[in-house]
Amino acid sequence: MQDRDLLIEQGQASKVFVKDIMSSPVVTAKEGDSIKALAKKMFAYDVDSVVIVNENNEPTGIVTEGDIVRRLLSKKRNLWFTKAKHVMSRPALTVSPEAELEEVAKYMSSKKVKRLCVVNEEGKLIGIVTQTDILENANYLIGLLKEMLEAGYGEEAATMHK
Image 1 (tube, rainbow, N blue to C red):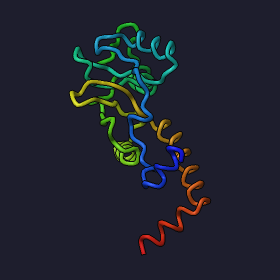
Image 2 (image 1 turned 90 degrees about the horizontal axis):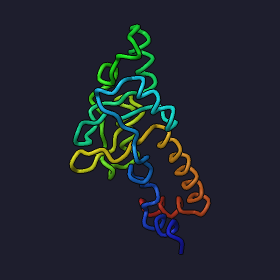
Image 3 (image 1 turned 60 degrees about the vertical axis):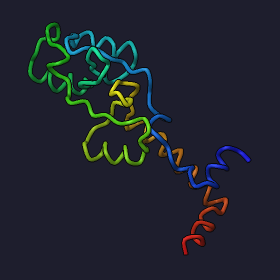
């Protein structure tokens, strides 16, 4: 029996955790770093955000491409002198690597955010999870549920709950 089949049999196939899909390592910067330096990092690593961390690698905020456009360009700030602390969104919203994806998706929706910093028990940054990560995995889960229904697992579950 394959691992996936065993998970289906145990009713655990739909459980996906943040640790399973988060991106790591994370592109980071300090509050005192210039926006120009952050933009260069975004380009170099092909990401749309940089997590701002303190000296203990704890996330304090996040700077996105949107933050740069809204807070820097709209206020006509100088790109050369503006620091991350002037445009970052704070506080950095965090999640545990053990959190279930479904709950994380609900939390992100309620907070109207597109990304969450993943932190360990000590509050140190270990990853990032985005809406895109969740959507990609939702498609996987939909496919898995379709397979389960086609294999007759839905009928078994329905008779067990009667």
